[in-house]
Amino acid sequence: MKTKTGFELRELCGEKVIVVEGATTVDFSCVIHLNESAAFLWEALSGCEFTESDMANLLCKEYEVDERNAVADCRRLVAQWLEAGMLEV
Amino acid sequence: MKKVGEVGPRASIVFPDRIFFAEIRRQLAVGHMVTFRVRGNSMRPFLEGGRDKVVLAPPQKIRVGDVVLALTDSGNYFLHRVLLMEPDGACLLRGDGNRNGRERCVLGNIIGVASGFWRGNSFYSCQDWRWRFYSWLWIHLGPVRRVGLTFYNIGQRMYGWQDRKREY
Image (cartoon, rainbow over all chains, first blue to last red; front, side, top):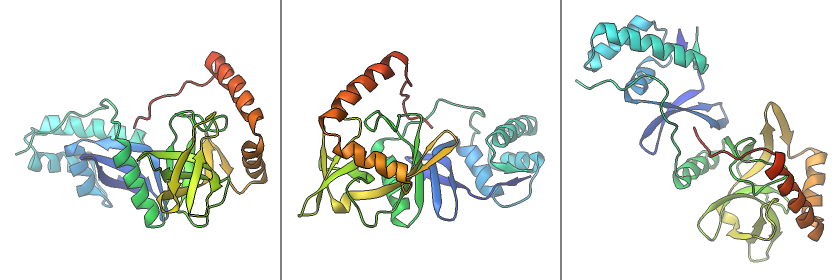
């Protein structure tokens, strides 16, 4: 899977959010909030092909989390990102 | 090593107007079109807070009747209609749904001009003759507008759309 183009990570008021941007348009009517670790993953994986285990590996390297929890968290995160239409499969 | 945050939906965040509109201003200033959901009922009957979205374009030539996003002299941001343009460059704004309230702003503080509106999946362009006619009518109705608004608001209170807080 891959992050969809046009979903840009921004920082607003200290919060990491995804805003939908076209070449000349920005849509603030649907802003998706990411926590710090989700924003880290989004930034690291933007534009690349990746799997849930790639995400879990990245999480384990950067954060204090065991692999089992990281995989479970990434699975839930991917499900949410898919539901929000942020990923191309 | 950092600790991971909780995965899952959390309470929605509400950005202060100052921050939110500053970002919109920044996007419009670089020539982008910006869409956001309107809040409040001051542009009734056409726009309902929490339901409709506005598409703003960077300001070019402002005309009476345009719906604009402006930083008014009171220091607040409003998406209201231009009612009058004074020779000194000041603009008088009024929400379609406001019975009396008016705001003043200088031309330079008009951040964007509405180019259309989304209601659900339907787009209403400000170039459309029906919108132009509605705009003309709403400016020229005079006291009839206030009477119409009173009945509209009573109807809304009894059966209508409930405004929601703007949440993301």
